[in-house]
Image (tube, rainbow, N blue to C red):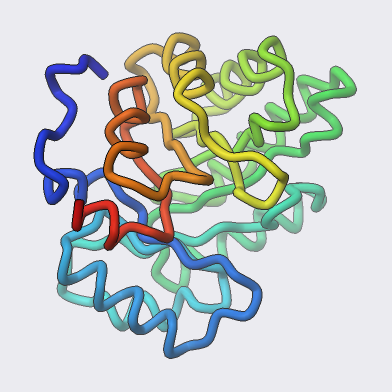
Length: 223
């Protein structure tokens, strides 16, 4: 994304942000607060674990904030049939966006066709919902990052995403720029993991991110 199109006011960042809560100890009350914050600040989406999608869908009804679920998170090491079932379930319960993790070990082993087929199957299972593909950049070489992006594009995914935030590393501007160069304007790029400040978010957008995943969203738009 050109620097000239980077939001200048912190509040303008809201439309880029997936307001996220993926902690294993998250409570329903925490999820309710997340949804209310997303409504207040007009964030793009609320991103949660699958068990909370029915609650999020109900809480966000009538708003423009999209319910979003991660599936087979954070490792992506489930069989494709499990991933597709999870995608179908969250979409059936209101998710308009789905974030999946690639089978990282298969990518690193050179099993490109298996990775592409896994993504393509989940995309089909999503129906009309957007699919974002987490490639877990901190575990990949630059060549593997490029390959993961190309496979995601070939499989019909809508976004590539940097990180789960659970693998010891998060988004970097360098990785976002590499991903954007690889997919061009044909796909979205989501920077996720470690984006905590207004300047972090601006830096990712300047590098090419069209979406930000963050749990510190309120602080980001608060400047």
